[in-house]
Length: 413
Image 1: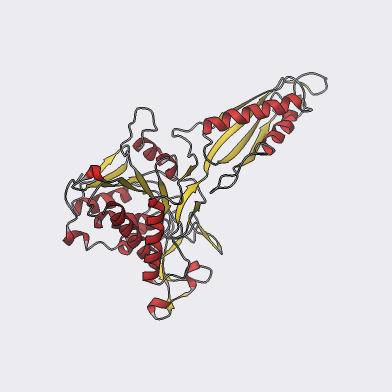
Image 2: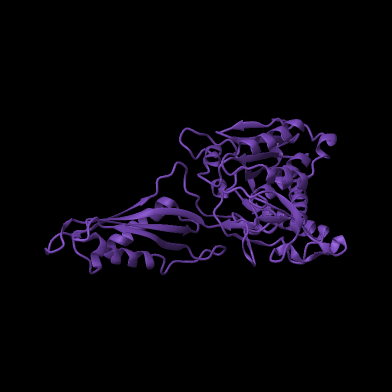
C-alpha cells in the first residue's frame, strides 16, 4: 500500500473510466470474479497503487496523506461480481424505452450513447467511477482506501471478513466514512432496508385423520399467518425508510392426505428498518406467533419457534445516515455539479434519498455511509440491473467519475 505520496500524473492521467467500463463489461464475472480482480489489480499495480488481495478475494489499496490522523479515513467500496447470466457488451445509441433515449443536447442533438451488458450499471459503472477517484486522489489529510469485494451478489463473505463480522476475522477497514458504489441514478442514497429470511416452525402431533386426536400443525398456520399479517401494527415508520415489511412467502406441511400433520413451516421475508436487528426480529416474531396460537382457534398442543435461515455471513441489516451529514451533502453537491457539466437533464442526480435494495453498505454502519453511482436498478420500461437489458448512459459514468473525484478532494483536501 502506498503511503505519503501523491499519484503519478503521467500514469493517472491516462485512466478513462468509460474505456475501463467497456473493458470490464466484456469480462464475464457471473461465475467467478477472478478475471475482473486481475484486471483491477493489474491496473492499480501499473499506477503504483500497491494493491493487496486479502480476505478470500477482496482487493485493497490505500493512499495516506502527509497527515493521516488529521482527517477522516474514507473508504470507497463496490463489488467485482455480477449476477447470472452474462449479457454481452455493446455500445451504441439509446433505444426506445431506455431512460437515455432523449437526444444529447451537449452533443448537438445526437442520440445519447449507452453501454449495455451484464454489470454495466451493477456495478461496473460505479466501479469505474470509484477507481477513477482513487487514482486521481492526492489527499492533504486523512487517508483513502479502495475496497473491492468479490461476492456481493451471493453471500458477501468478502465484505463480512473485511469488517470483522466473520468468526476469526478482524476489521481491516476501520473507516470513518464509506462511499458504496451501486446504481442510484447519481443520487446520494443515505439509507436502505435490511433483508432477513426466517422460518416459522409449527410442531404438533401426528394422528390418523379419522380420529379426534393429534395436534394439527397445518391448521395452526392460520393463527401463525395472522401474527405475521399484524406483526407491524402500531409500530412507527422510519423517517427515511418508512415502515418495515414482513411477507409470508412459502408454506409447507403435512406428509400424507389421511394424517393429521405434525409439522408445518412458513418461510418469511423481512425488510427491516433501523434499529431492528436480525436477532431482535427473530425473537419478537416468535413471541407474536406463540401469543397468536395461545389465543387462536387452532388445536391445542402445537408449539412454535422462529429460526433465521442459516447463512455463512451475517444478514444485511438496515442502515441510515443523517441526510444532513457532510458526506451526504458533499456527494450530492458534487453529483449536481458534475451532471450539469455533462448536460444531464435538469433534476437528474444529486438528491438525498433512501436506496431500494439491501447492499454491503449494511456492514459499514453505523459509520456514515452513502450509496452512489451511475445507472438505475429500473426505469420506466422495467428492470435494468440484473436484467437482460442492463445498460448505463455514458454521460452518467463520466458524471459519476467526476463527482466522486470531487467529493474525495473535498473530504480529504
